[in-house]
Amino acid sequence: MKKISLICSVAILLFSCKNSAGEAAVAEQSKQATIDSLNVVMTAQKAEIAKQKSIDSMQTIVDQEQKNKQSTRNSVATSNTNTTTTTETKKKGWSGAAKGAVIGAGVGAIGGAVISKKKPAQGAIIGGLAGAGIGAGTGAILDSKKK
Image (cartoon, rainbow, N blue to C red; front, side, top):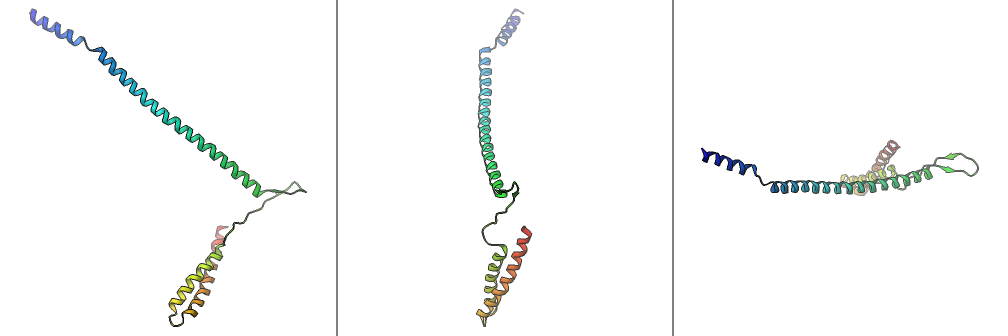
């Protein structure tokens, strides 16, 4: 009986005396790893916030420039009266009717020359004129829809 109580006492003593220093080190490492990961996340968030602030400030500048351009374009103050008149700036370039006429003339000329095998020059002229007319009409319709 003494041997059994001695063995139980030794077993209880061994199990109760855990290596608390090792556990403390593991717990400390776990805490430090968590802190490090949080620092990485915070650094990334700070960088993202700084990036967004930069984008927002650039957008504000662009918006101000667009408002200034629009206000100078749309309102012209007259020297004699206090009224303002709005003016529309016209776009430079070809109208839709002109583009349609050129494209139609080219396609019509090629088509006319191919179709009229005996007289390709005559077919090209007729096809070009017909294509130009149809292209100009189509371009004008598209121009009216855009406005």
